[in-house]
Image (cartoon, rainbow, N blue to C red; front, side, top):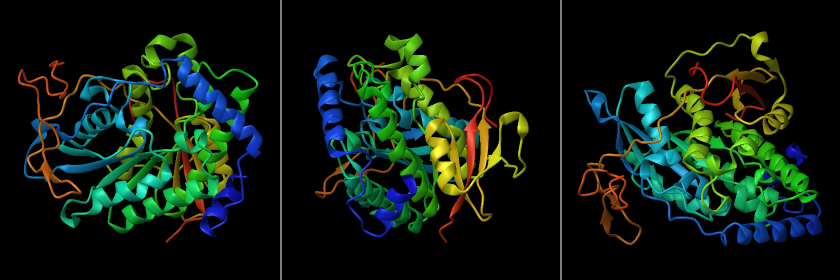
Length: 374
């Protein structure tokens, strides 16, 4: 199914669905009801986390430029401090690993679907001199809940990846999360949500890899932890992640973010202890969608490598420094990426607080927060 969706996206097809229209319609109604049950679907406006991270590493090397695109997950909706957003967590983690400052620019929009990526990419590549070195895209949940055709969703994503790669940026995509982990979505619709989400995630993986990007499956990353600690990993609306939830997701993405920039060596050898294996890209995408935190990377050989990575716990208390260069807004006005609070808290809320057909697949090893990135 994932290959059919990806093929339909590549050739302009629009009739291939993830499930029957009636089932998806019922899913949509259930999700909307669930959002009303958990606070009307309202979450705090995500704080701006744009700015420079790792200023202690300032030196002769130019800062790395990190761009974030996508929906409310990429924007960090559900938390109140800039340092708790995935952009801030990834930027500070990348700065620590690279020992270079990192300039973050987040153009993600809460509620966005994949067709908004065209606008977001245009914002990031408007100035060729400041094109990001690497971009992270988190998208897909709203595509499912708003019944966007899967082929259209994947086509918009692959176009965005292709534009960013053409501009010279590396791309990491956090694929569609598992909507079956939302607590108010009950059986039998929970399995429908899980199936739809996984099929879209697998199709996103195929499309991204074929455009030269890498993917990390977010899947049910919060599922097991949520069952044990529902109040810790989801925010006040029980729909968006909490600070701990975003830290968990960021821990899964950071190793791939660092690897795509060549910040540590990688081995092509299979490690049986980590259940590594070789698969074609379509099967690799399907396997990755079933196991959260799995990385999929394009390769020349007609196979895919499945590998588990250990993760590093990320601090959720890092706030940005104001970026020295303002960004032009579409209307011609100018704004600074981030302005710290008067008391130096810096969170801005005033409280001071070639297209490969096969792929490498890398899976996480151990529980989130245990061990070190390798």
